[in-house]
Length: 522
Length: 82
Image 1: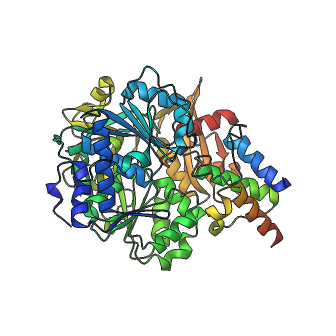
Image 2: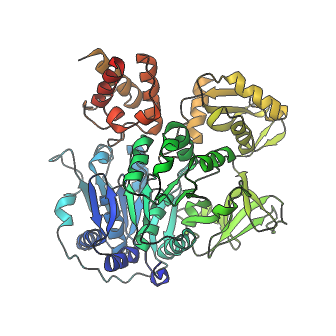
Image 3: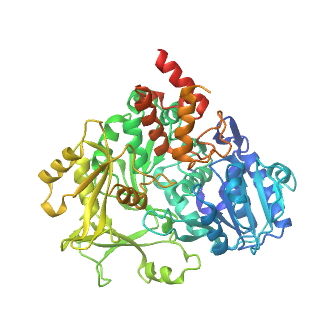
């Protein structure tokens, strides 16, 4: 691995790889293959054009894109100017976009034809947007309330050499919105230093090199997706973009064809791969697959065990833990400890420290449950325009994750659930993750979310939303299993069987939409 | 328009486009245009299995079979006659 400590700014990853491996394919997307030189030159040309438009350091630029070459060029191009890249969820609706625009007051929006309808339905008046850049627009000739430029026209103008904009490493680089799976999305402010330090740590523990080829099915607007891009560009590796994970068979086939070395997903990704794809049939064809990594929430033990059985023996499994507020990563579990410590999230990554803190703010003893608090150069600057929420999670101790957990004698951490998800049922305090884990042990289901529905008498009643493995599985089968395994007060009063649980755009189970589904079936 | 095509179109429009066809063409990619996500694909699969009494195998979950009205219709016609 190259000496990554020399990087001070995020776009230096691209610039140095363009210098060391100019002709190497950095990105593959459908029929497109782009080298480091091509991407860096295009990013420089975009940066020149942005500066000509009056974009200055600290200005926000919105990126509304599916994963694509144009997103990658835009991301690094914006960073090169000292402006702030704000990737937006592909799930955005006109009302949500209007709210974001008001909150962020961006100077420019870069997007593609897929999102043109949403952009055109959004009121741009009373905003300081100087220009809109569109790749492959569909409504050519239709006027907008701000000057509109075509991607192809601006990307071939300007200088293609690296710019010399002086940017501090503490400067704000990106605002990434949390997935909102736990409530309202929040704009997490990350500096160059936050992201660079985390990227370097991840490259170290995954032992990434220029030989690595990463399959990317997670969106770049999600912090884990962005981290996949930065880590592989840092080492001169390659990324393969596949936006069709809904068709997992074609993703696995491409992994074989492109000799992919790494695959990353959230828990639902692996549940889907194991139960709706021919992964097991491809076991002997995935000879290049060095590792699979998982983050983005708790993955039940059964999925980890099944994944270990199905994947080729040489493929290592990395269980990881992090948060948008931590620029992506906080801990990882070494693959060789997976069986022994299957429920653990591992130990802190290089440069990060973690502590378990009790309700009085004191460090909890080994084995005692408390809140996980993290410290390190990767911890965010705060939430965009939300000092009140920032003050609730950032203090002298570090970043309060909102996750409850404990540490064992060897320094390994365990997450038992979210503080926010704890609920009262008839006077008992319930952690839904515990019930979900029991349900997963039944071997009847693919995935589940246990929710507390407000109840006047009990406080909450428990409802399990479930995707069964087989059509023969009934609500009664599920509830009977729970009744055998759990005390009465922890047994859900109802189980709703669905074909698939609703997911957020980042692929995580969307608990709010699960709640809406429950209300609709009441 | 064939009955199969009409049924698929109606299902997609009703379930993913809130009843507004918004210029949905028979060759439009559901995923590229953000019309259907992975959860939606499974709903579409479920609909096809129930409506046309077929079973969609895991290895058949590929864009060539399910990523546009044209692809679904061709896949179903092939599946039903085979």
